[in-house]
Length: 199
Image (cartoon, rainbow, N blue to C red; front, top):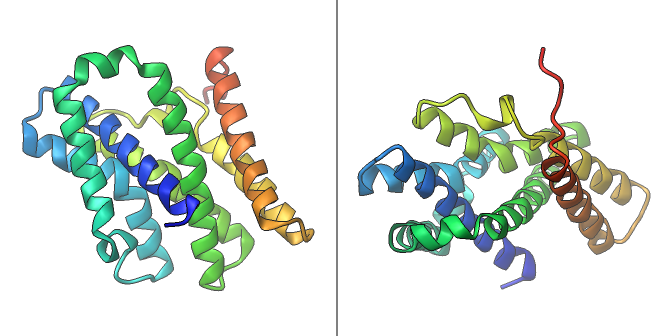
């Protein structure tokens, strides 16, 4: 497996844990937790693939993604107390995950011949819409619409990536720049409690 695939699976695993913990807080049963975890981890990529006309969607072609989701639910079920003490670690993995999902979404869209602007939108969809679906299933206003700088970080990082490859920058360098910017914006915004202004 390539490093991007490994990180993608890691992001899927962490997002599944995130979804499971939300389901636990809502006192869902194990089936409900599986549904929420699946939606959180794979919902963004599924919506992206449907929008750009890729069929079957990515996770259907590789059973490792389903294994990652089930593993995430299992870890959340048996180690929830420990996980709640590791929120900072999970936050970092979650941030890395949205960076990876942003890149994958952009690259898949570009491979379909879509414009950079649309590719950027698909990168954001990949990164954040799993969380949107999770919050809707849990009857909550999606987090990205009311509190944290989330999609904005993906927008900034994705833009840097697209500008970089347009200028002929090495793809790996552009990917690293994208990841660092997303991680940096997320970390600074949370530590400094920076949020977008309310309408």
